[in-house]
Image (cartoon, rainbow, N blue to C red; front, side, top):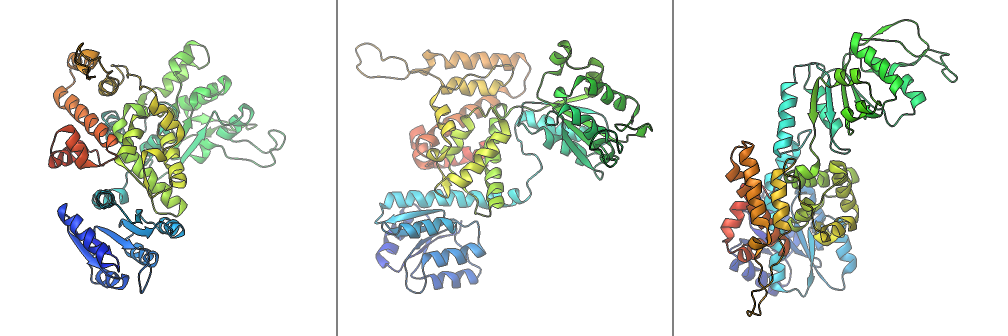
Length: 499
């Protein structure tokens, strides 16, 4: 690990921080001015964290911050400032500072802040390359790995695919991946949301029209089928397609021919169709709202995308990715998010799925006051939802998640009479029987590695809870759990909690 650099013209400040960091067994190097820092950077040296005063002879901390960020954009910089320097604090955040430390400061709090910056820096060192090579779809959850395997198996096929899943779960991303990795990957990918176009215009959008076919048709227009020739046509929300147009679509899928609106010459379609819907098409067929023969034409291969609440382990990497993306789009340094805030995000149900998570990260990029997002910075709807008990997930839909929910909701048992002390006995309150039922369900279903699966989920929930209570302070979390500092660090790495 590289040292922590402390820059301050006040020798007493340097001395106090040097001694405090040394007690924590953290390497430290001190500077009395910004010029020496820049000279050290020119000599190809770099710190893990930079702590700088804001007012120093020969150049301010804000100027130093700007120059350091030019060379090392991901380096966490903590700016020390007097209480009266609020304008300077604002400038520090605008310049990309990790956090600011008001003077006079409490030494333990200063060390805690530096440790947070240090953990973020170490995580950034590991994650920079991964973010630079971000795949088109993120997902480590078993359900998403099944989707990835299906995309791989379909990579050399032109078969019709039906993608199902809740709104916002990423159906178009999967459609684009299917196209990209198919033999048609060099051809066009054309998408159309059949629910977003009025019924009287949808036919023209799909099949095109001839000049004079209707009022306003002043020129011949190619439809989406022609535009997608040699490539892929993605029909989103196919369940909302008007019934009469379903017949025309069935004809195209059956014999590959169609007519423009007002046209008399058949046109040949060389298009692979991928359809998607959030609706239950079997139910739509039973209701008479969707043609059964078209359903069977589309339902050659079906891919179901899991809801975000069914793949909670993917929320932390997705959140970090969306914060990076939002920062780039807005032209600002990407916000970082604390472990406690990530734990709160992970517990949220996200009815709007991945799209909602992306919107939350965009909101945080704009609205969070500091460079590091804490629990209190989260949108009000997330904080309000966290105050309510999280419902248990159905065993069949998400077995591991239901264990987590049971643990989260374990109530407090009354104290034995005569003790006068309130005790918590979650075993008698019901989560252990729930865990046993969960284990039985997994064992009966023949799920492999049940021990490892449930143990990892249990340990992850314990660590998440401890980090939430201690606001991300690992040492204190380890003490509360009764384990060592090295143990919690190793477990966080093994469980992928800081990915």
